[in-house]
Image (cartoon, rainbow, N blue to C red; front, side, top):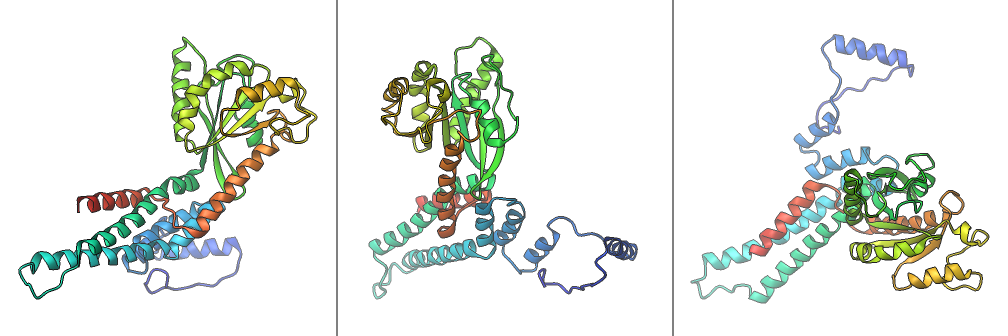
Length: 355
């Protein structure tokens, strides 16, 4: 059985009432309902599965609508991660054996010991595999909890409007008053089988309001945590966003950055089907000047009207491409999603460094 224990199966009529009465009768005779996760716990205690597979069962149940999270948990439950750990353990035991042999019998001239190059090669092979596993946790954590997408920019650039459009609901308050968003607002959406966690942040500006200052500091914190950054720029007042280059770009290193020139309909770009061409003949002078000012940033850009869902379709397409890359990674690689596993791998790397 699943738990390794004797089990009894009862087949009865499919009526919910009959099933309920049957359960009541069993409980009256001394049975009880299983606690959450109890069958998997018993399977682990009875040696039917190791701890990493048992943890994967919980991840599989919690995978909800994320195909990537489901795929990673299923592979772990089927033993892929356990097999990788077993192979690493064998290599570590082999390395330990070679080291202990030389320590215990160093005075025996007739014994042939492994040379330093061989020991170094084995150590580096183990280190490389551990490092690869450790580096996968960033992706794994994003898959499990939602890829963090920070929506940043000036006040009143249209960040909250964009969030509401992407979510398909009025999650954030939209107002002409500057500084309306004072704290990060988060929600998740499944796009292309990958869960994205959108974070609407406080607009960046000089403010004497202490609450707004706290919100602005959290904006930079969320920017650091994000995997994808959507920088929303007001096309009608883009010059004021130039000052944010020095603040945003260092924090965007190694992240996917997309420049979104919002309110494009107000500068004559509402009729362009694909208005993202950098210097196309149909781009008005106002847009050309704006693009030239941001040309030093190595990032894709789109012209959008955040209020219109059709205008934001290219943003969704951009995220779908990111989701496809995530799906490819989860199909071929072992991805760490569990913090306990990550801590154990880091501990193993530290121990290897001491050797």
